Amino acid sequence: MNIKVNGDFDLKKVGMRIRAERERIGLTREQFAEAVGVSAMYIGHIERAQRVMSLKTFVRIAKSLHVSTDYLLFGIGEAENKNNDGKEDALIELLNKCTDRERKIAEEILKLLVTYIK
Image 1: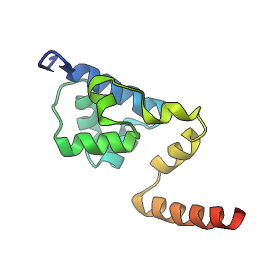
Image 2: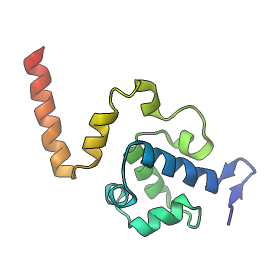
Image 3: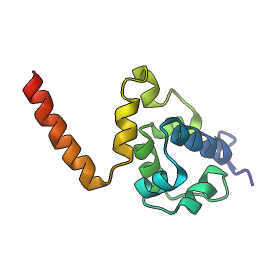
Image 4: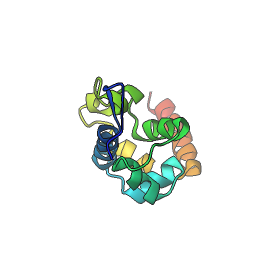
């Protein structure tokens, strides 16, 4: 199934961009599904354009991948992380593997560290 709206929107391409970004940041489908708050099976359906996601899920996917919604929908521009020359990729990969609680703790530690080293 290949769903298009007004000839410009191609759900299959959206799914391909989601999968490519997920793999680029080193997340398994299961890890990514946990970050988004859906099942791994549902992520698979989205990546293969077999399901249409809600707007809420789409926004959570974009945020979890650190890319713009325009990039996912239309391939406009670049994924936000592609402009950092890979400098932030390792940190982002680590944070994506953390729970929300662990991310908050890491953020507090990083704030203290940055204050200390300045």
